[in-house]
Image 1 (cartoon, one colour):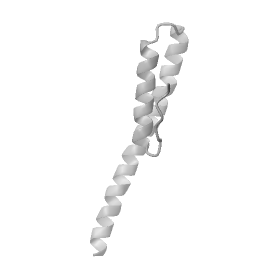
Image 2 (tube, rainbow, N blue to C red):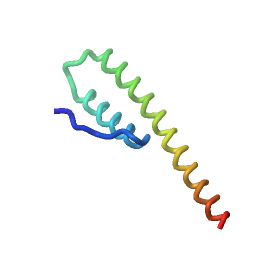
Image 3 (cartoon, rainbow, N blue to C red):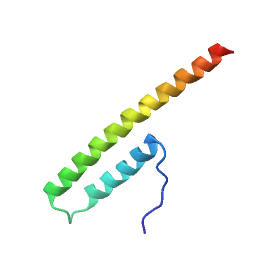
Length: 71
């Protein structure tokens, strides 16, 4: 059974992609070329989620600073 999970933040995507890459790496029944292509694609998705998450964290920190300056 597939574990249900909410994907609401870039961090959630990063966890899911990491899990799926590890599952692919352990599966010896998949053609090595197809496995490499899938891992490459998922790695690219991971990097996008990583960058988005990093940007969201920085934006949140800036917004907090602005709120403090308004007070």
